[in-house]
Image (tube, rainbow over all chains, first blue to last red; front, side, top):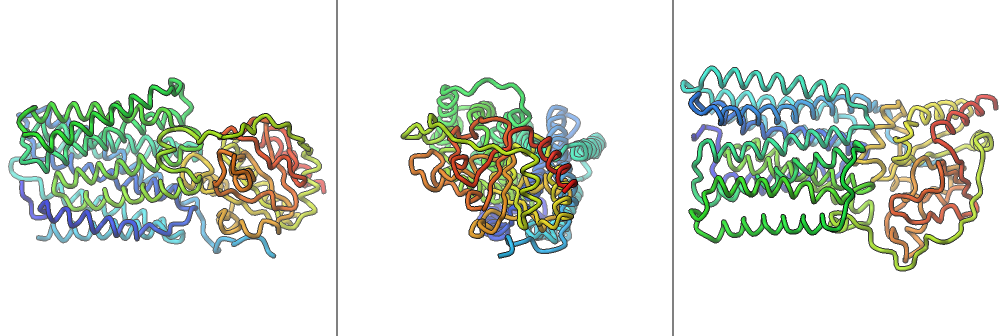
Length: 108
Length: 460
């Protein structure tokens, strides 16, 4: 199953190394107020693992019902993780109404 | 070719979305960007994998499971109370881990071909990380939800160590020995079951104030499991997504550990450093204060701060905090909320609870921004927090919490600690704050006490 978008193992390792550096840079200075939404949002992103289930499901024939059933379960689990995560993050962030910069402390 | 470009766009969207999520003014946009990117990747992958051989049943199952999953996710996320956010995040994380385990086993038992050692190792690591994240998050959920669990005993730590050793031995053995010795599907099944058990025994001894560290760590584990699946399926978006999650989880884990001055290994061992001198037996001279006295004290202040802890969430006193802030504003008093990084049961939990109660973002302050100017506060109200305001962490090298960064409430002109009784904090350490001349204790339920104070303030 070699599809146009798929990458070789060594390409994959390049992506791993570079995204790891990128990932730390992107989220390095996140204020504490956003820690919970960041966590639930990144949790939602990890639901992207359901792509694996989609690949398995679409490449399985009716002759192997168990594979098909297992792939469906994987898609279901991944979708709940992903959809629920994005929805709840949206709900949380809707509560943060940012108008002014946070106070830096008492007036001295 | 077109598909590759769509995929590239999706990967860029994920990174950009996460970047926006770190900026308070654009966080909501960031969440939407990340969500749309994932959906785009999903459509692209379904399009690329659909072919003449794809059965109608597969397509029906795909659409059906995605619809059902999306509805379940939406309903759960709409119904959850903000105090229960750590539980929901744990459940979602558990499902992601379970998905990784099912995928790995299905790849081996269904397609049956493992070409070479690299995919083999990827599958094994995916099983280990996914399995641990699954059961670990389920146990974390039950702990957070207050379900009855077997009491943590020392044996759990040894069982966890033995399971970890088993998994490492099998992995190394697989790398060194010829691949044909044990059928690979059996090997992966054994590894996955071991990982599921490990998740249970590794999580059971961890509790209380260490929950923020645990949840961050489990989040990182799911990220790594997703990364492994990305390597297995040669899928760049899964790879990038997995790494971003892993990096976020690891970063929050280290930040939470720093905020408690605890090393990760201490948290995982589920124990506090034992105190050399038992300071618990010292008699404390405690001055108490009534709600009426507190109200008049607050009314004659200019700058007041509240230090909330998990006890505030337990007492469900967030709305009363908002009401207090509104009332004090009418009395011409400015009220801030000072948050310790590990207050609550997950990183940033207190901020979410205060935001839900409509407390403006502008009056919520990080510990580090304000610790140097605490003496300007006329009064500090400590609600449901204990260890994070204990001066022993700064001046008593024999204390088990020595070295933990604290909110310097003791430097304020007056400190009022709201407490139910004289129970100690999570660490079991005597709070020397009570011995200070400027500290008084207001006994009673936090919610009721706040209501009384507000009623009194209205009369003044």
